Length: 198
Image 1 (cartoon, helix red, strand yellow):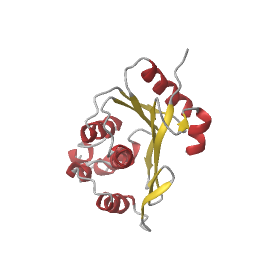
Image 2 (cartoon, rainbow, N blue to C red; image 1 turned 90 degrees about the vertical axis):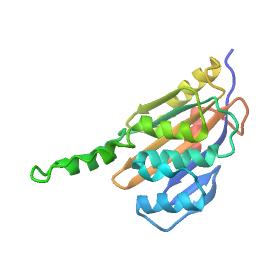
Image 3 (spheres, rainbow, N blue to C red; image 1 turned 180 degrees about the vertical axis):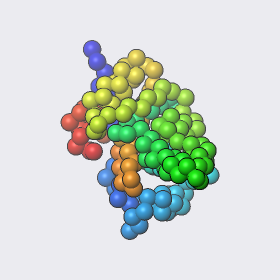
Image 4 (cartoon, rainbow, N blue to C red; image 1 turned 180 degrees about the horizontal axis):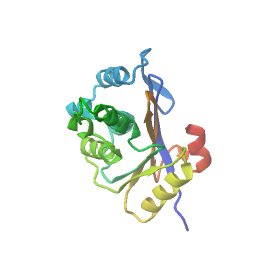
């Protein structure tokens, strides 16, 4: 018999707004991604100096996770994230730095904090998480993939909770939706409910 799991809480970061469980915790009229991230960092009092060295994907995931996990005591939390293009947004920046043959200078700074595993790594470091992690690349948000994987980890006791969701940045557009799954919570952990909250 399968265990029933629940969504404890969820966050959104989109269009200059950060919300937790549907309540706005930060909002700005800024539209530039970097300015939005900087303002949110200051307003939400995130103490993590490496934040400003991270690429856009890592900043977005880190921020969306921070508002969910800042008071979390559990450390055995699996990370199951996804997006549609991995680190393509950062890859384009790198390509720009090397395309001119006359001024060819590939900047290592572009790749110091990049790739999905860095995004998950920084979340894990900040919140001292020591569990499983996985990053899926799919054409669109797919609740079934996230819920199936999370349920497997929780049922097999490989994690006590799971932080799941979508973290996508592309050409200045960004969207993060993360949620925490556990044995107790507010919303049933089902595809329909995940889609509704998304």
